[in-house]
Image (tube, rainbow, N blue to C red; front, side, top):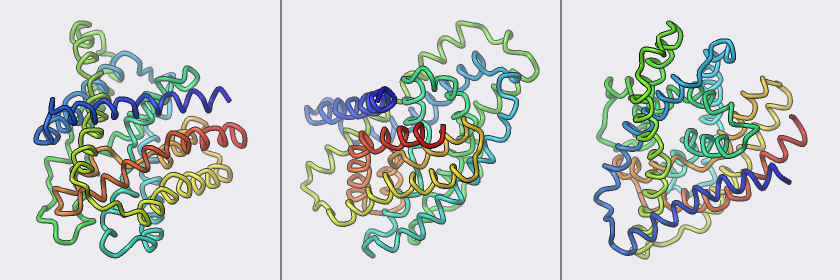
Length: 311
């Protein structure tokens, strides 16, 4: 029960920050014109700052001898999720298929795991693992999201390969491997850590505000597609991964990350990316909102089942 309660508390923390974002926008303290800017600030400034400072302070090669294998596990999971996404998207309506697919495929693979692992003491050592596991995720996301929308006017951007998240991980790892962490002044690390602490709250505030803006327009709620999406994203995906974990038996740290990556809601930036690609931002927001709400229960359930059957 403690695992369920702790996981629920971690997810509810994110949910409550989203409620604050909803309230801020409803009171006209912030407009939706700043969402894109704040999203960039969170993903390309605050998050890399968090990663760099944490890796410099906490990464120990002896404690993480197989850190280099974590990105390979991410590649495997990404291939699996793509196959599942294409297979299960047959259940979506034709007009929402692109939004359905992109929301299924791109999970909130960094912020949700970080919030959960940082909140539960027995999982706190997995924070560094998440950084290594997802080091290529941001570069992959921003160079492929538009492919789900055939009419999107966007091409491959070589600059996005060297996303600040990837650069921050590689730079910090190189510094640690060459035993140069002592060269980075402590005030710099402290400053970066303080900037990094903004990343999760910023994205959750954006999420709440974004959803308020769309729902204030009285857009039609796609109940059937939303229900099918939540069933697939929040329950079927993690159940399939849980079965695979049971038979493959990956290392414990990898197993828990794989399960959580398959169980979390879509990435918070999905509605913004959908809008950039010319898709229906409103339905993307609905998928995100309902998946987020149900994750308050679905993620704790999956973690509890994992602890009972596998751990």
